[in-house]
Image 1 (tube, helix red, strand yellow):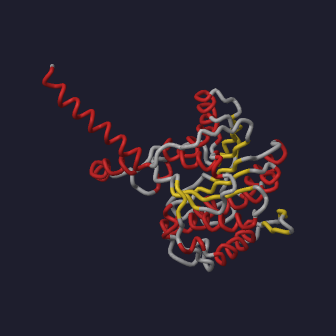
Image 2 (spheres, one colour):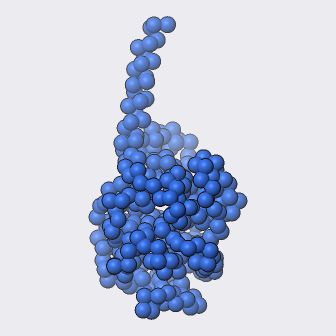
Length: 334
């Protein structure tokens, strides 16, 4: 028996070291211990992946959580899981389809009517590299869901967020925004051959530009907004990429993926940090890569592009800004 002890000990050391290395590469846990009892938090796309884990983390800290999802069966199941694990019964499942302007308006109206406050809005939901689909209103799916839907939702909830100040908005973007470009002549990919990767990168760049312009508009309101690359995680987001379909790639690249790709739990830590950390109060208009603030791509800091994108987005979703208030109009063709 003793002859096995040394190999087993060495194996244990290697495995333990690998786990520690993976956690280090992944960025670690949220350093803040702040709690949010009684605060209302909305998390879009919270039935799975990073969204569900973020909702779980914030429910542990005492928040009143709204899971905003398209698939209500999965949403109800996620809410049940979170309530059971955290013993926090203030976790609700609400319907929100970000591919439908009508659904977004209905959701926002319900929040405004039924909730006294909104302290944290986490725009997490996304689709990645899907086929050339369009939303209910005719927008290219990735641009429509990842950006335009959240643009409208956030604007419709701004008055509630301002009334709840200090409050926070977190826009999940991606490192992929670096490869993005805003093509104002063809935002919906109607003139060019569709490129799933380029469309995804454009949508994530738009989220960072939106963060910058919204922060400028919210100065002095007590509402902060920041963009976040949470890291690459093992979630359902990559189901259209083919990353999980090849046995060969799974075998050859598996160790690398295991080291570099985060679990949803680890990927939720930066979002949790932005939502609760007391040291981030007043920090706005920034881009975070994991737990650290970093400079985004040059185009993401172009104020002229940010303002032009805002104006075009408002036109596309039928939103006009007058004297700082949202005026709802009928959507115009995209």
